[in-house]
Length: 513
Image 1 (cartoon, helix red, strand yellow):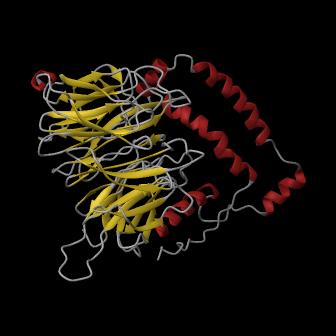
Image 2 (tube, rainbow, N blue to C red):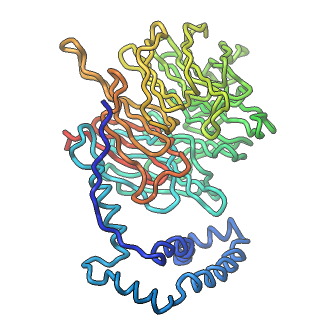
Image 3 (tube, one colour):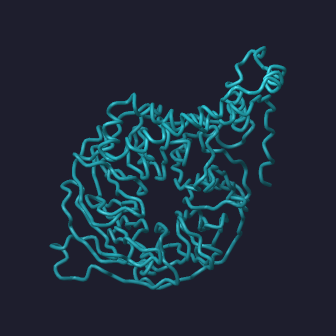
């Protein structure tokens, strides 16, 4: 059964009209002065937005008169009423009650009565940081992620690395002399762990690059420029990294320029080894470890799954790059998952921003050698996030808030469960594998799912029951945009996940140190 509602602590919160209005008025002033006392940040901001001082000055004048009106002296009778309700005798100043309440509510929410994981650390150094990416980790316990940081009217990018204790190792907002663009693409490490590769750009961005930095220092190694955006997450095979560059589209999903392509780049040099036209390949590719075959989805105006040879143009020696292309009933924008000799993909009519007025989706299994469709299973909406497979069962996150369990061999539904309430599921799934089966029945595994409104959910693979859920947002900063898109990373007993307002979060199994 789903976890019952958490019992919330009752805390007296005393406010008056001025105190309630004050934070709304003071917030923009505080933001401005926060930047003002950071000269480097101020110079960078003014360099990007040279017109910014004009609205700030006009806004400051407006705020002055608004504050003067809001906090004007009350009539004598009203003043006597306020005095009668004065809280100055309380041991905690009135303004701190709200902070105390939020802290107690969160402590109660994350109390040790949970059965699976507990929050350990968070990294959220600045307001406006959204982490949409799936964190990458290495054998040393380092964690890497890309962020989208809210700027005036836009977003800028930041790439950073933390040690195992969540202490910053490095962060960059430039690559060479160019400002980074916001990250939707998740970073990936080279096989030797020395290089970190990631694409740049959100869906409205253009002229974005695939970049490579030194994993130890963040120093720039190389970049491959494109006229498009790279929301696809790279995949690595030997010295090759492959990624899709998605189309810049109008309101009807029609490309306004280049319709898209897939890039193969040599990691050690940054040399482009090949480029292959595929319509809107915003799906994250998968590469088979044995022969390097690349599998990727074609999104809007593509509606297909494509298999590509990994060799450079020079080594291909006239052979066709494309091994097969199989049509799909809908755009395939979800990441590709390999399961033995099958290629699993999800697609549908909705995307990460717009829910279709006629939602529909599909999970497809294709023969990886021939592209032949083995089965198709309809879903109530798009499957945008990563599909995970455990012991012959594929677990699929459906945008409408449902997880679907499918028999990989037959495509038949095993169970379907609404896990996110009225929220959506945009992020992919992660899984803790079940232990070896010493007896029957087997011990179920745990799925980690993230609802768009900002909760990490632990879901049983047995039947989709939600065992527990944890808020991901910062205290007092609930998700308002539904942009909790980060697919969790599970490494041993540790779970890492990004959020819209709470930065990067670290959870750990309760029975672990």
